[in-house]
Amino acid sequence: MSELVRVLVVDDSAYVRKVVAQMLGRSPFLDVVGAARDGEEALEMAKTLDPHVITCDLNMPIMDGVSFVRAQMARKAIPIVIISIAAASGEQVLAALDAGAVDFVQKPTALATERLMDIADELVEKVKAAAGAPRRTITAQVKVPPPLPLLRTFATTVDIVVLGISTGGPQGLKVVIPQLPAGFPVPVALVMHMPVGYTELYAQKLNELAQLKVVEASEGQEVEAGTVYIAPAGRHLSFVRSSGTVVTHLDIRPLDSLHRPSVDTLFQSAADVYGERVLGAVMTGMGSDGRAGAAWIKARGGCILTEAEETCVVYGMPRSVVEAGLSDAAVPLSRMAQAIMERI
Image 1 (cartoon, helix red, strand yellow):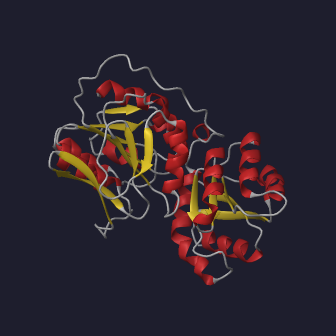
Image 2: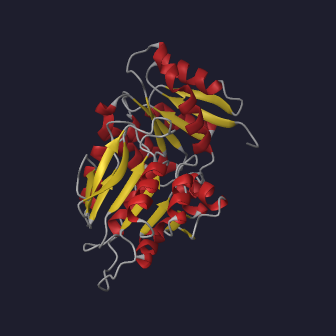
């Protein structure tokens, strides 16, 4: 990084503000330039300090985290990383992401204890990734696009679409999935990196916007056209072919993967079960999850799309696929659904 990343910390707990500042201060790339007690104070400090990234609690007096994200995004787009307690705050977390926050980190406890230090590495990496997000990709609540027309009867060359997405994923999927029209002829399965307790709620909310049926995947579901299966946080999603049908399988193995669920695991399983008739898409996110899985799909004769750099919040996962020579086409977010339909 060419300059230190200026970070504003927002939390109503003085202890948490101190600990978060200590965690971030361990990185030679980050500089905590201020700490605010609530959203109202944070708005004023952000105007004065012009931070590159803001970390923000959700439950605060005067102005809570969701209200702050909305207000800040209306004033000036700054990458905001939510730091939340357990999944009881799921509705608020998703509302904050919907309002424009780019990522979130789950606190291990709501109490003021040293356990907060457990999130230090994750928080530092997510703040650094957020700092690199182009301002044009950080937007307030996305406008859900209408579904694309289903102009013809599909004679499909693809039997399943698999997607991998991370940082920026909740908003990105709200652009892509609602564009897939009713009558979409194949199933869709996706991995989005989220802590345990959020994927079911996210699936329910996405289902309200989509023409397709969106569900959190469960064990042994028959994989059907026109359904979107979201891998549950904490378990890998794969497929098993049995008596002419394909069903979902959930497992904590492999244990050595950096993420659970893993895009690599989903993609590899799809390639094993569906062979060359797999279309994969790797979208915005930090890291390289999806690169090995994309290689597996390509080796079986399938096709891989990547989200174009200019629309990624974090151009990490797609970059890893492109640089490995595995991408058949780089597609901006607004055209991803169209590109998927063209290749089916």
